[in-house]
Image (tube, rainbow, N blue to C red; front, top):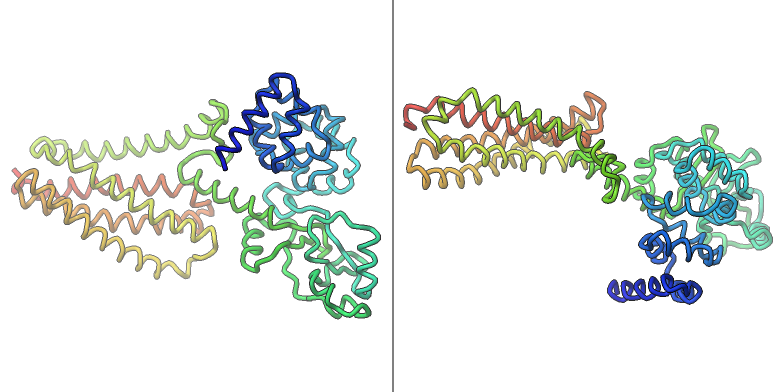
Length: 449
């Protein structure tokens, strides 16, 4: 399928480059708007400028909804503000808000002033991007609880409300406060003379407009919702979050955690400008270099021991590296558990017991393996015992650090553990690995030489 799409993209690209944009348009219309958006992104600037003006407005509006965020500002900058405004009138409100936030204040104002749906978009601009209010749409269906089923259906047929989803119909009072929800199924099968207040579900799962997006996504996932109503501080219905937005949030949050664990900026993309990437990556690399210097300082304190038993230098990186890998494994599981609210401070003892037990098991396995290797290299049972014991103890350290460092960052320092847990775990296992191994070797030096 991907090969067929690549061939289609090549043929459309050839048509555009040869000046046959109208023919290219016919081929482009045969594929999904999401694939059309990918094609637009792949075009060079000259070909894109030739194709965009001939795209029908409805098609271009749908393509805009699927444009990847990193490339979207550059592509939309090629469309004049006066032409962009009617396109954004047909785009989902939450995406329009994201787009306007990407523009300069001047251009955002120009586009908004020309939009027919500015009344719906403007209230959303005041919400932070990473809150429920920043992702909601104002396209929803609200009805009065005193209405009969027959009247509600007649109303929907008459006004044909522009709702992003009609699976849920929200019942509000005269002040717009959310009272209940009626599923489309319940509305269809109910008797025409029944009132909505008699068939609505009153226990409605809802989100405040200032709720963090991660908490909001977790609510949708936990309760298997297709849409989630958003209310303000006075419980007035102000918007709806749909499941497609939640999927984007889940991907964004997962990507953010991965990038943080790697010490990379959360807004960085594969093709970000060089200096932007450098600005985000260098601080953590500097921290890592400092960690390396601390480890080197520990090693210098045992220069005499290493000089007398040179094979120690070959075994040191194995003990430190294996401890670091084990610690990152534990920290990743703990950070994810904290992010999903699967863990809190009440779980600390159980978590430590489990991870230290696992660390002891790994320590026995890898300690024995390293002891065998050390004996094969040197023929020294003492060196084998020192190496195996150091590996065992560093695995215990790795387990403790993998649990305690993320928990301390989260509950003690109120810092996102994904941001720094990996760096501190590596520092701990490197320093302790060298210290334990070289310290034991120094104690047993008479038997090693």
